[in-house]
Length: 284
Ligand SMILES: Nc1ncnc2c1ncn2[C@@H]1O[C@H](COP(=O)(O)OP(=O)(O)OP(=O)(O)O)[C@@H](O)[C@H]1O
Ligand SMILES: [Mg+2]
Image (cartoon, rainbow, N blue to C red; front, side, top):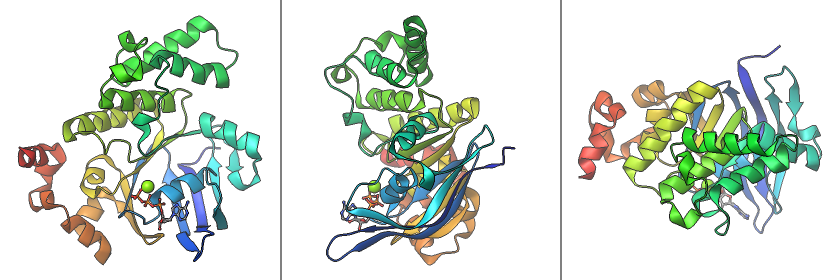
């Protein structure tokens, strides 16, 4: 039976085993709901990327998971405890069920391969039964979905703008229709308008395709616009987790309020802010 919960993280801790050791994530527990956008906010170095990697078992030494576990409640009804998977199972799981758009991802496309072929590679590797024509059509469809357009199939990354390259990365992350996409600061290198456009699109696609998103950024106002719920992290701990609405109006934690106050755009009415008019006006 499927539940409303997609992912349960319990008592999760990660230490970087350096001298002196750094406890980057400390006893974090959270539940991600099916179909929701969960924002993860907090200042640089608070442990956001470490948590995102840790959830998917992507961490490498010197990182050590010192406590906790992650259970993925598959839409097929199975509960998958990621602690019990071997390396090959984890790799398959990562593409099939969960995908990630990495921090600075738009520079990680292969510069000497056409973007369509890079999408095609995802299918060739992970869906060996797909026929060539099917792969081609699916890759074109994905380029349309993320707003790059199928006519860019044969473009090289350097022929695309930063925003388009970022969309291609998002298309790749969506290629196998994962149930969860984790996005780590996917748009910070882009200007505000392009960023907003991409986020609106992710939000729409999420509604159409039904995946959940963990969206990581230090930009709390941005999360207020796009998230259903927001987790605020500080020094490896989630200090607050609530609906975007409630974080905005009644942030309980002093640190959350300071984060909100550190963005000047929050002086106006929330309505303006949500429609995105205020920040753009201020930017002019
Ligand atoms: N490979 C590593 N070795 C040692 N310490 C590390 C390593 N990677 C990260 N850390 C430390 O772990 C803590 C959390 O880092 P992390 O990258 O998860 O933060 P973050 O919240 O994603 O920051 P940012 O917003 O800058 O991306 C920091 O104190 C960082 O210095
Ligand atoms: Mg990070």
